[in-house]
Length: 185
Image (cartoon, rainbow, N blue to C red):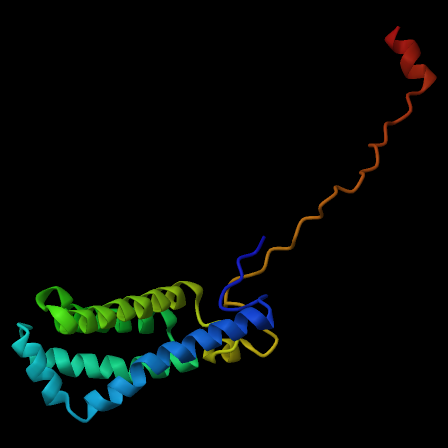
């Protein structure tokens, strides 16, 4: 059985779910990214106060990841790379900014809720990284609307073997003459 990737051979329902997954994940990042884009120095100061070394560099990288990562999600571009970059940004921000175990009372509950919701987003990114974007993505468009992958250059397709062997005719045996049989006796 051939391995079909990136939505090939999948039905419209699965491709629709993969598209919805991409859009919902992008929706988790874009509003926060727009806010952080307008105040990178505030994020850098918050990271530095929480003990993150090189807070300004880390904040810039996080904002870049949170702006361009969701765009890659929406279009289904470089799924493993975009998921990995967003996972890294999510782990850094969640582990640094939402350490609920350092708080008590209502602050602890609020930070724990944010921490756990980020774990859910992390699970969605892992799902996306493993399943790929589906056929309704930039990669699906690149491969063609019919969902068939373009053959790689230099790679020849092997002809398939028939499932049932064809019967072969019996080899023709020469008929022995009577003279040959008489000489042998």
